[in-house]
Length: 75
Image (tube, rainbow, N blue to C red; front, side):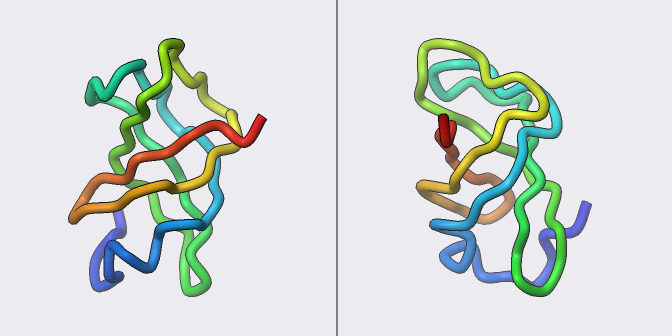
């Protein structure tokens, strides 16, 4: 896991891929890999949709806090 010294706000608007299926409606347990300009970050992820986002789904970060991002599907 490498979300080390990156400001959470710098992740908003970046795209990535679901790494571990993200459950619906803000439930924890999912992970995403986000392509930050300096590195590929694997980070805990949540989403507000009503359906799980399966591994491999392309996503965009809509909000970020220390150690977790909120994402939505790009499709």
